[in-house]
Length: 342
Ligand code: FA5
Image (cartoon, rainbow, N blue to C red; front, side, top):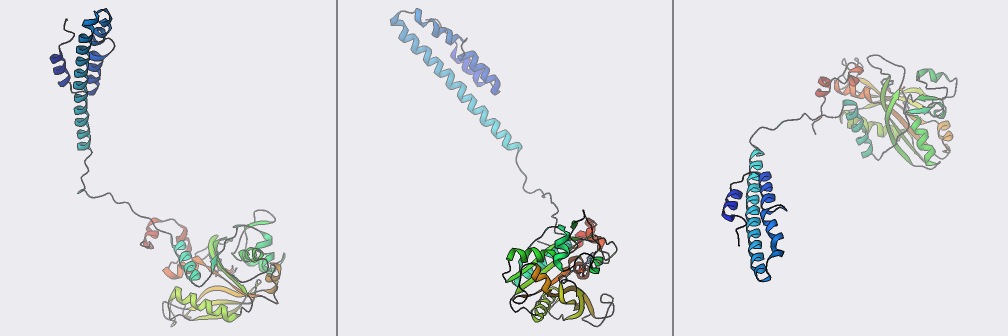
């Protein structure tokens, strides 16, 4: 029987092959359809039956030997390749890391969070209302009918005759009361953005308020005063006092301006409190019976209080910021000064 292939020579060639693609070519050469081995297999039919078994076995042995040699070499090459990759991708864990600066909430958001947290701790829940509001909710439901002089107090951005950008968060009171369908108790705070035609160092065309509304049977001014004192002390320190000055809002009766004793000079008089010892903090009052009635609550059964805080004003007081526009300037250097560590 003539020699089909020099096995030793073939093995040598296979073992010296160091490239996976080339090894694949060798597989085609030695074992492919046109290989000497395949041709020899095809010749088997021409052999005598007694020769066929012996010849067949030797061809098969040859085939297995070649296959094993190729597979072994392939495994070796693959392992070498893997090791090389692992070597290349080694991470030097002693190298200093790349640091990324972590941002933080802006000052206004921090103050909103703080006030909300205090109020949630006092049993309030959070309610929201639309920034694009109807004239009806922004004014009429708040006891400010058309032609009422109080409409001049809030120079408003109108979108059309009946739609506007809300000029205060008070209309959320009406939404919440309507949703409650004349049944108390209600105890909510409503943080949100409001808009007015204002622009100077202490007034912006876009700012934030936090409204509070409590409606239940038997709510009095004493409840209002108690909650305001608690909030003022939590925000500005346990030594703070508050004072209520008579004021006017169409949606509350009686209405008050609430001052807090100056936290910078402890009430002695300084630049922050303009020598008075008191800082104006917010507007408040007992919910006007017309507002209760208009939103489906019987004013003979229910009473309530409300107050509205200007967030930017609190932030400016808190951090001694002189110009409100700094709060919206998106100046990273300013923002960094108020960065709250997480
Ligand atoms: C109101 O808007 C009432 N809705 C508040 C209220 C609610 C009273 C419930 C009674 C009961 P006033 O117009 O005073 O009130 O605004 C409230 C606060 O918003 C002010 O004290 C001030 O801190 C802030 N504020 C008003 N206008 C601006 C402005 N243009 N820029 C920044 N803050 C402002």
